[in-house]
Length: 85
Image (tube, rainbow, N blue to C red):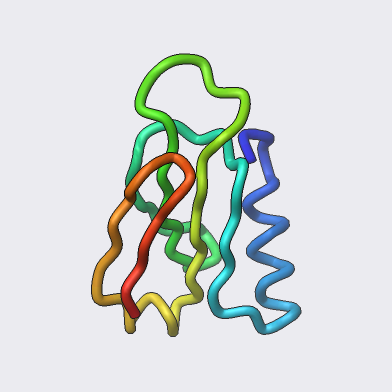
């Protein structure tokens, strides 16, 4: 997921197939957090806190409609992320 444009491709595919919630593994992202994409999707992620990362990391992408129903999320580890909708 570190390659430029991969997230955009995934968001486009979500729109074309009408997917509202998408889970991803092996994102290779570090730390924990969330951000809004240009496609108006909410990305919640959890990865390793330090060191060089060649694997691990999880993320959940929520559509704009689904993100409004999000009650909370907990990044538990680089392999587990819990959301409450």
